[in-house]
Amino acid sequence: RTFALARRKLGEILSAVEFADRHAIDFVLQREAGTGVRDPLEAQYPFYVLIETSGSDEDHDAEKLHRFLEAAMEGEGEGETPVVEDGVVAQDSVQAKAIWRLREGISDAMTTAGYVYKYDVSLPLPRMYELVEATRVRLEAEGYGGTAKAAGYGHLGDANLHLNVTSLVGRDDKLLDLLEPWVFEWVAAAKGSISAEHGVGQCKPEYLHLSKADSAVTLMKQLKVLLDPKGILNPYKVLV
Image 1 (cartoon, one colour):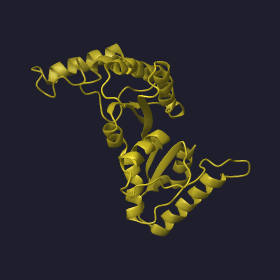
Image 2 (image 1 turned 45 degrees about the horizontal axis):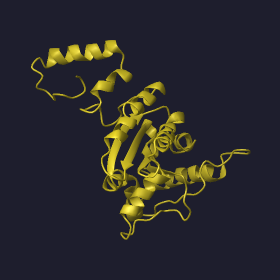
Image 3 (image 1 turned 180 degrees about the vertical axis):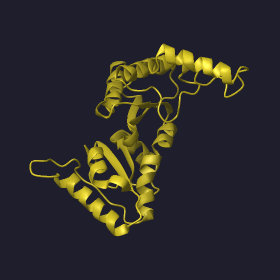
C-alpha cells in the first residue's frame, strides 16, 4: 500500500522505494555500533520503507512530498487507515546519507556476522515477503532457529527481494541443502523469477528451467552456439 500510494502522490519525482525488515536493520545497527549510525525512529518497527525523490523544482517537490506524508500517516480520505506508523524526513544530505547507510549496509553487515547465503529473486508484490517468513519457519523446523538468521530487503519498485540467511556458526553445507533448491522452487511456484538484478551467473544455471520454459532455454543455447561457437565469451555462466 505504501508503494502504491508513493506512485500516486509522488509520480515523476519518485526515484527509489526500498524496504528492509527489522532483522536486516538490526544486523546493520549491531555492526555499526559506536559509529553514530542509529535507528532513525524512536520506536522499533517490523518493516522500514525508504523513499527517495529527485525533482528540479524544490517548492513543487516539497509540496508533493508533504501530501504523500499526510496521506501515508493519516489516511487518504474518510475511512482510510494510515499506511505507515511513523516516519522521518532527511533535512540535508548528511541525514540522507545516514539513512541510506542503513539500507546499503545490510549485505556487508550480514556477511560479517557469519557465513551468508544470498538469494536475489523477484516475486509478485503481494507475496514478496512470504518467502522470508517461509524460510524462517523452515529454519526453525530443522533446528536452525538459534544459529541461522533470515532477513529480507530489496527494491519494491522492481519487485526485487534479497533474501539473506546468515549462519552465525560459519559455513554449513546442511543448511545450504536445506535452502537449495527449496528457495528456487518456492519462487517458481509463486510465479516469480529465480534471478533478478544480479543475474543467473555460475550459481543458478541448473535452476534456470524453473523460470524459463524448456523451449526458451533450448533457443538460448542455440543462440549461444551461433554467436560463440568456441565458448570463450563469459564461459560457465547462465547456460550449462
